[in-house]
Length: 77
Length: 253
Image (cartoon, rainbow over all chains, first blue to last red; front, side, top):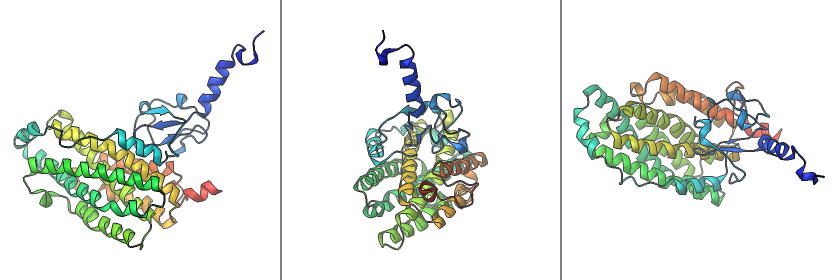
């Protein structure tokens, strides 16, 4: 039998849960995309994972491209 | 959400550059060969930056002095070092290309904003007659976020053909620094819970600030700067659609 944490699909569920709450920071200006908040003015509804944001979306603070963001757990608060 | 002061301090440390290391010799040799109309437009922008960067470097000291949080004060100090680098760069550019005539070439509205309005606000801040939120709103959001941003975009677009590669490389570095300065300013505003009149003045400031350069900045760049300004305010909860959205009140609700 599988140990509870090793059951098929668990890793996928875990990675999806992480993606749904993962903060992403704009490396240029410090804006933090929080999936819980989305970006209403940029047409991004709350709950949208960063990976699912359209490629032409830009940073609401500095206009940087999506490529200029990186996942970040410590945002220097 | 905007990153905290530790993030900005680390970022400032990573982005340091040397304004004396940029080679402007080719630019200086190319400058007299540019068409007069193009030279006139570039002169307006470069002279404006020469004035502006000196002013922002000089006027930032009171901001660090009145910051309650030592981590925030340290970021203001790091920013001031950036501004001194920028001033040094534009000093070199002015010496090489504008021949000591920079003051007479700068747009009057830029001079007014950077040599009168900013020093008056910084003096009021130092004297305790105004708060840090007023200073940050003017310095980071209006002057850096709109005026300088629009001017940098105009320079970068104009010089995209490689006419003055040293100048363009320098402006790229300046623009990179200014992005985090604006982000840091937004972070400060969030923490400071500014009065509604400060937010209202920010909402109203876009068009006139973007026009400070006159025709040296094309209309589409001015429009883009205003749109970005409004998006920026929306990102911290000051939404243009809600005449006076108050970020701090909204968060507390």
